[in-house]
Image (cartoon, rainbow, N blue to C red; front, side, top):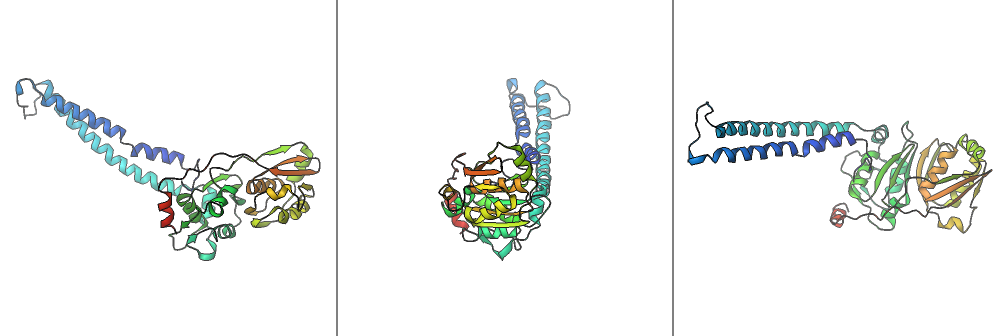
Length: 312
């Protein structure tokens, strides 16, 4: 697990680093040298190899070239270590804009230990307006790691941690992943589907909704559908279903997200991510319903319990 998600921004640097970490070239040269040494030692009749600089036999030729190959292998290994150091530094510096933005956001509440009692509110309150990302969203799989499976514990070691540090700690110490789907930063687990489902049956309504602006700043922490619905319907000036106190909405997940300056379409997608729902756009009407898709069950490492104990 890592703070860049499954398709992180440092793919090129990581590939280069793996090439130098992998000792394939050096090992091949060393193997060739060992073979040549064995061939040079096994001379017919047990004659001693000449010590002068004159090549008197094929075995002397093999021996001298084996020494060159050994030297080349040692040089490649040293160069590889240097390249590994520089590519590692470059990968740390080559943050994408949304990561740089998070690294400038101080973590609120001054906490050093993220648990189910503080993680959602702490991260959402720390998300500030920026040019790179409009929303930070906890998907249901991520919150389940804390509230349902009780597997969410992360320790921060920085003296003054940032929001980026907190997310990095979650992705390294829990089963939570982070993925950037512009303009959203998604915290999710392996079970969450990352492609929102929207059915468009009336394009003019979609265009009208896109021109609407939602509340400039929102913070929904454990907010249910009935709390969100009145503002959503008012801001989009559109009939939104299911209505308040309906049986259908009782199956929606509670919403956990912070956002700045979303338009009408973006708030629909953000709510679909946060509530595990999908929506259909019809003439002057938008209907939400549960999203039953399931990607895969999170894979728990064998040493996960030991790691969790260290972060308690």
